[in-house]
Length: 123
Image (cartoon, rainbow, N blue to C red; front, side, top):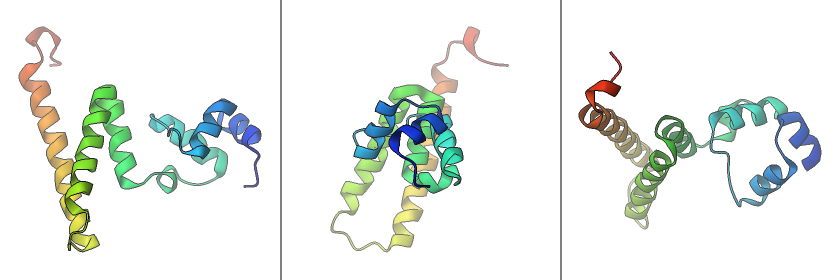
């Protein structure tokens, strides 16, 4: 879009320091709302700014907080380490990663059901 960092910060309603940090790769947005604001400012879809792995981590963070995000990132990192130097096709890697993400969501839901005290469970 030809924005300066300051112009993008203003358009997305973020601080200049935040934009600089994202651009340098020192950090990335932790909330889907931030991706949405950036996407709107840049006139692209939020999915354009997110890889599937990043979307998974952001969704985990929104649902389960920083611990959920760290666990989701550990799933990604662990799988990436297993694939290093491997012979799986990209299609197979995507299928395995999707299966791991599904397992993550199912196990988190099971744990919430299992370990949440009855008085805090939603009916």
